[in-house]
Length: 330
Image (cartoon, rainbow, N blue to C red; front, top):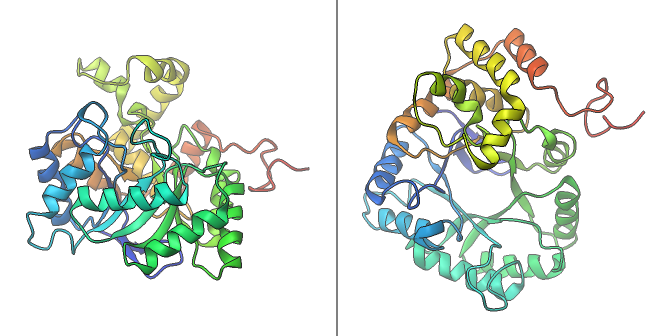
């Protein structure tokens, strides 16, 4: 496994991040524990979760699965850089969601209880809260840090403007501020290259892409259909995206075949070649999917391959010639 610093911090994290959103709803607790053990065996030390994960199993169920894994001991917690999130509503009563000081405090304590740990390494805001001032948010996060309940603060789904506003508010209080941003980023969705990536690089945030396979579409969905395999990317939003991008995906899977690479590995490897990316979140539902994702770290893409991928999935620069964030200007 390769490691890098998380943004400008001294924290060393693996270049693949184990996402846990499927633990519980899609993956049994037994298999979830096996995948986490396998992650440690292969050197993955960065795990990502959220207080709302669990879906039909109930909000908080995923953190509980992780907590019971930590409780098995043998250095599991000590070897893990643990990230979880706050924002989503955990109930119907006022102040059970978003980023008020009250909810940040309560949500952190509840996550610690479910995770069976005394601290969270990277506490991430799952979404920007347009109704809560940064002064309140940073004061609440500072209290948690002083209490030893969190070490670092990260963001998720922030625009470039939100990152700048958060960092300048933190700077005025002489705080470290954000150390990471978790964004939707993959070959089919490159919008973060316009503003988010430049802002993250400027402020020294590590970028953690979520949905690196765009809901499975970049994982060889057309090949699986031809082979009669099952795929969850055939209905709803995934089905519409598949119909919209079918021609491009056919060419993409041909590029992967020419390289002798699994399409999923190619998509992950491409992200690992992007400036500012700490590591994409892999969300395996099975041990086999986990083993496939591991190969991305060992995959090097040459300049010709990167150009072919750029031709297939053009960067979102309206004028083409100028780099972001000035790409839109004349």
